[in-house]
Length: 365
Image (cartoon, rainbow, N blue to C red; front, top):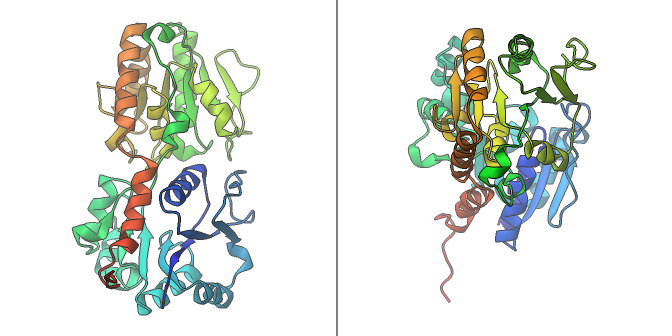
């Protein structure tokens, strides 16, 4: 018989946006205990370390081969297993066994559908690649929902949301029109990787800044493979910060005018949700998954096609021409849109699968 209080999470890299949803679940449901297996230093892309928290037990993926991971699963007898997609073969083997045992198994997927040969092949083999492992799929938004439907999942088997910003942490306690007049700077927050479009942003911004078309400096936060290739220090037009804790990022967000993420590809992009929570107007690309929820073109920001240099220059210029009252109005709209997804939604979505599981008859009192 399954242990109804145990939830096993088999994940890739744990990030702050994961932790806030874990904590939300445990605050709302006092009987649950989370057992989280995730990547260690050998695979992690960031320096983030999840904090200790009551009723969350963390395990390092590299310390477990398939047999020891299966022993962990068998010892826990979880009511639900959450798996971060098809990233780890050992995770899939546990998911397959859990399905055989009648355990609720939820997969996650943030891939958008582009109709590639690989995706069309996955659709043909969906039962073998996905549905035999995952009864449900947890996705972040509409673009991912489309793909899961093509993979054969029924509407009621596709769950929302997969990701969520720490809404309370990023939302300013007070925001007035008067404060907008003092805001300066354009914020980029993300990995310094070609896929993020950071090289294009620096190029376009520098040109506009040197021409005095715009006066706001570019503020860059993040690390990555391009860090040593880009000219980030001792230049007049930008300010660079390496990896920063969220508490420090929030202080910077409180002083900038707007946020820009010119990604070439972005399955979701929690940072867009965080920027919306902070009450920032947003410029980003049409392919960013989170833009479908948190950015409405001309309302609280602007959307453009990836790698479109002229369009990026146009919208940076357009934003620079707005007065404080217009920026403040866009900021309020971002703040309003940010409330569409909150940590409690993730918590209730998962907990309801256990609480309302028709396979476990209710005991009459």
